[in-house]
Image (cartoon, rainbow, N blue to C red; front, top):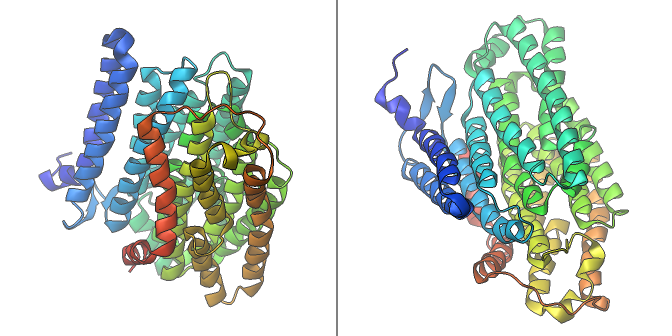
Length: 478
């Protein structure tokens, strides 16, 4: 098969990242003790240059390439830049944590870059096989990252659970794809969309295939009842790995849901809307209620993630352009808030001490008022308290379901927002109204402190001025 130069140009960021991943792998192997530092520097350069390459091509015409299996559009450009920038911050946050636990190895960065490549492929996939390729590249790298701490029983157990359940979910997704292929005679999303729109298909078989596709998407997002892996993996993984899993992969999973359900099967909306309503409502209820009982902060944030996924699904199930834009806004905002929350855990951690218990935050307002304020901003935003950006995210998706007269679903969402505020406010109570259990100072590099502060202040600024990001998300689906 011959490819035009334009086709290669569309995928230039992915090609560059793949080449750099191989270079980082070799550099880590041949630079001895300096391997991890070299790998870290090259990884940051790779992510920055990839984001720049994508940004440079934003105003150029997009379209399908590689025989309709890959798409370049404004949706993919925005999400891929977000993934690169988020992972740059993730790697910066992670370095001090890894050094303190003898986990500062080049393998972490190699796996992170390969996983990022998988996310980018998922975002631009317009064919079932391309989508699956990106999904597995992302997932296999993350399985290995979870198991990196080989001396930890918790990490090993988390990796086994993640791998086994991930394999089952991949099998479900493949089975759904094979059924859709049997009905439509194609694996390309353009052909599938045209076949469903034309009608004349066996709707029973089509809906049966959709069930398995939704199961696969639900697992990757962490929606109830496919959430069982998420709390154990978040708690058992080294916090640097939890940080990676909790952020950019959610953007990629959101993109997968949009590509499959909206781009490929929009005309089968009546079949998958009901499934997403169930997943959304269950995720909001289970995530918020169980989070109240948690004492481990990482586990609490895992159940918080499940509830946020429920809100993201609200926008998708609305079936409207405004709903899709609201979900995209929510996914980006959630990633930014999660980045800060786990970054704070790493900031407070030190050698021999994991700051992953809620009690570890006691008296932080007295010990370090500035970082307590940053954490307060993040928790208020996650709770959806105005005027922070989390409020606008929830408002957008709830408005989307109200606009299509799903009032009962909107009422559940509002009630769960109120319940969810309880466990976020508990963190603030612990920081400001309880005595510190230790007077140990927070030890972190200057660049990490600065980037974390910028992270939290960005959440605040987006709450005060949400218009630009809202307009960007709306323009993607216009």
